[in-house]
Image (cartoon, rainbow, N blue to C red; front, top):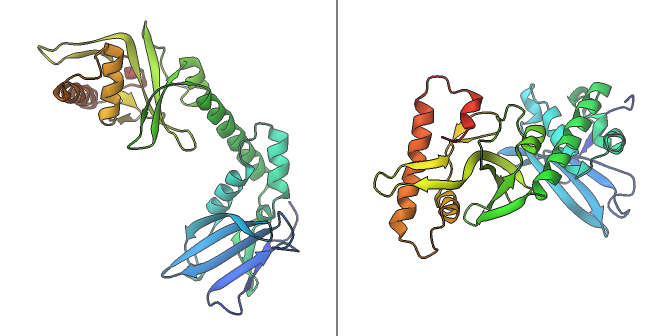
Length: 282
């Protein structure tokens, strides 16, 4: 970690544009380019890889202007490195990839080399980032292996049947034990398999058509314990499937179940200090 920071050179043709290129870029396959440039009224930090002689795999992050005097791009650099690592579960491999990446050296503008915009990563930074990357890869692999119960095409989500032990390991350590005869349902963004929230759904939930009471469904919580809404009609449809309601059921029944989910949220929200264990089904 002793290498000098990258020095981004000012563009001769474009104002407020600075860049650094690996030797041979872009003709040499796999070489990298880092750029900091103004785009309208905002500034961007980008990372590109050469593919077939042209820039490819472009990552772009909006950042503060380097002229503010307080600009620092450490978090964006860490995010860029995490993306470039990809789905890798070997800590040694991840650690080596981080250390060998040019961005790990940090960078400054060639015109002001004393003003480091991103400090070189320390050994502690590398260890922390490697641990986070491996954990994220293992979480994603676990999520991808779960059974898909239904899909939400409107919001690009999937609803997965998850084992609570796996969820404690990969999502939330404080997740309580599942109620008897209930499944943990995890809602996740289908692109990138990003977990959003979870709730317990009984194998045999009950919806009372006289009172509109819904039993066997817990409130929904994000995987930091925060209370959230179950979502929209697609959760109601998932519950209707578990209830055994035929596909041609009246639309008002779906709406009534959605309202029942809102009441479950309201009841949980009305508690002055809801405990993590309140994720359990009613």
